[in-house]
Structures are given as structure tokens and as C-alpha cells.
Image (cartoon, rainbow, N blue to C red; front, side, top):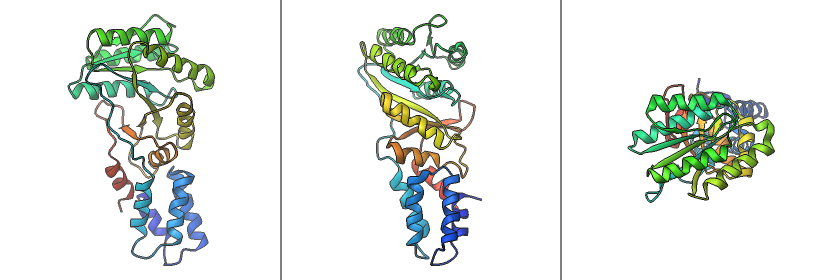
Length: 279
């Protein structure tokens, strides 16, 4: 049963009872729509008419989405630098590789940098992805300074005229202050030679409001430009995308729905809302 079938099943008459409103609120919260969007929909339910409830809720969801561009930045004059940030375990490194593959398929020349040097597994993972998709990867020795790796990658991106440089960064949120200082250093060092055009946060769509709280921390510290949502399978719990945009006014630019390279695409807000509200 879709989210909206559950909603309409709970709204049985012209006047909505307190019990129905409570059930409706529970459904919306369980769908990860967040308190702000939920309140707007509850208000729409309170004032509904028989013929406009679905339309009014769709309009509420649409109005909650960011109006900022979902296009990925591109500078035709120099390499476009994309920092991929987020908490470990969200699919951050895999998303960096999938984005690189997506851009390569758009006929762009792409370079990746393995700047998550705290985890040897992350470096090995992105190197393996690079070999698989045919994209070069810049990495350092074990425990190398992430900023130094990113700086070397930036210089190579310029020298060899790459269209994009994608930098995978660390995500040790339990050492928040050190992590944010490290990310700021990576950005500062790279920008000595070339601007950073995008800082994209990878949000695990299954973590709900906890993921949103993490995104808020990163946004306050380093200033995000957009989001990549992973594990977004189109189920009724997919409301986290709307909740995130409503809270941070940051556009979701890409979504991942599985493990393969093909399970990665541009975020289509119209299709997302249609899937979420289909009856």
C-alpha cells in the first residue's frame, strides 16, 4: 500500500476526527517526512474538502522541495571540483565512484582522489572502482594527509585538463571537530590552485531523521551545495528526501537505489512525488 492509500484510508469524512489526525500524523512521521512537512499536511487535512485533499497534499509536498538548481556544476574553463562528504557507512565512497561513472558516460574526462586516508579500505575501494570504470585515481601512502592527496589531484586535474575532479573525503562523525577541521583544510588547500564548485553530502535514505541531523552538522561546518541520497528504493518511507530539502533548502542532485553502477541517477523531483503519491 502506498503512502497516499494509507492517508486516504484514514480520512473517512468531510470532518477529520482527532483520532484520524493522530493516525495520519503517525503515518507521515513513519514515512520520514519530518515534523515541519507533517505539520503542513496535518493543517491541510484539517481544512480539507472532499475533492481537494489529495491535490492540496501534493501541493504541500511540492512547495516543500528546494527551488535551487539540481544541475551539477560545470566550468568549461577549468576542472570542476566536487567534494563528496558524509558519514562512513552511508555509501559515500561508492557514490563518488558512481558519480564519476555517470559523468564519464556524459563524455566528461574525470579524475578521482582517494582523500579518505583514515580508512585503508576506503582507498582500496575507490581504487578498485577506478579500475572497474576506467577512471584514474590519485592516492597517497597509508595515513597520508588528505589535503595533500587532494592538492596533488587538483594539480594533475589542471595539468591534464580534466573536466571533473571528484574527491572522496573521510566521514568520522564521532570525531566531529577534527573531521570538520580536516574537511575545511582539504577545501582550503585545493582552492589554492582551483575553486571547489560543489560539496555534496551523501545521505543514507534509510537512516531517516538521524541522517538529516548529520547533514545539518556538515552544512553548518562546511557549507553544502547539494545532496546525494542512497538506498532510496521508492517505498513509502522515502519521505526523507522531502524532509531534507525542506529543512536545509539543499537540492537533491542524485539518488542511488542499489549496488550496481546502473542504480544511480539524477533526482527527478516530479517523478519522485508521483511515485510517493500514486494511488
